[in-house]
Length: 287
Image 1 (spheres, rainbow, N blue to C red):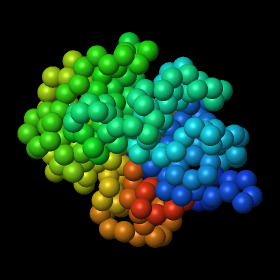
Image 2: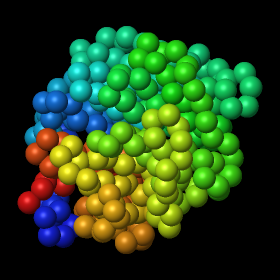
Image 3: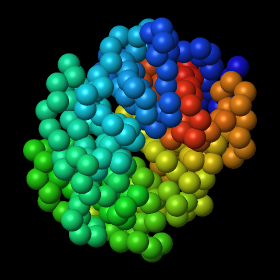
Image 4: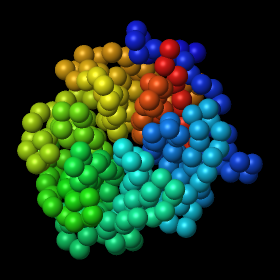
């Protein structure tokens, strides 16, 4: 079963990801791949971070004693794994062996004042200098910039629909031109900033973007959209491929819930995770 178009055509890998007996996924807000194309599945379940090889064989699990409310995941160039926890108001950094290295925020406590980090944060991106950008979207309408060691450097954003304002800052990612893309989900748009937080541009009229991923070598963005849609665009917004059609469908490869997480491995294979439905994770192999 194929999806997409042209150069961005994919074959659905049905039944991908084999859990140990008796294990199950709940909602799967996020998915990411490391430098070896191992796949990290971040879910709201008894086993919040499960790792598979690219063929879907179970390798390991982490975080049962630490992670409590999965939302966003990011893996950096050194295979450090950053997990953003929504309801516990914090970000966790693990090394590639699963050792907890850093916690940003006070677990279980929101920021003391409106706008202070964190109040139901959503996602994280690592800049080329190692500093961190964190979207703080459900309780705040903010983006926070931190040093690599966890020191707050700057925050910006306020509720609204104007430039630099957010209704729900749901994801942050940095492209190869050092532009910060922020999924402003409830405003159905993406806003672009420089790394100092200055507004550059916006993409309006999207299907409530949840998360984006950038091709490492081309100016191409992969987008998981809440309205049952996956889209692939060039950076000048030429549509390359799209499926889902903003309609709930339970058939294999379509979306009975809502696309929420997106990642592409080194071979071009695409992973999409869903929320509002249990245990839905799709692998599309690049044709």
